[in-house]
Image (cartoon, rainbow, N blue to C red; front, side, top):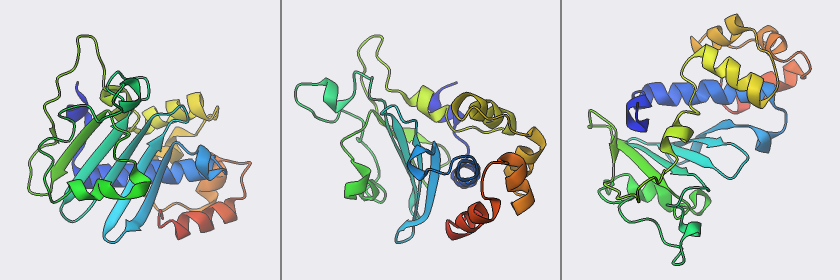
Length: 210
């Protein structure tokens, strides 16, 4: 299954990223070490979700009234600007991105040039789109690997938490979070007995993740 086929509808994707960001907040006290994060009002009318694996790779997803755009960067990909003498964006990555949503990437915090793949979807589109990029034989843009870090089931997230945070999570509690059950202090304590559950609850509230 390709990266495009793995992606859910934009509204479902937004909820899924918020779920994962909430769980990361519960599991990891240190903000910059969190794998998934969300800033609800990152810019006027724009929500930003981010995946940062701590190894130099990332995915940034921007949700707006015009549509959704995903910028991914795999630092080991041959498509990386840093793997080329010219340090330029690989041809075709941003081709055909609608003018309504391409400017979302212009913010300096986004690092538009640090990219190996771009996926987008206007709100009027029926499917996700990607530019026609000619890759060398055997090359990989990192999209399958990085989009695969959007865990669409509670079971997948539990396995991720075990591998990344070295924590064994109660599947039934993670299921509740995925189902949209309001997170309580008790649920936080069950997911991470070592955290200050009241403080985490306040942070979740301030981040508008509950």
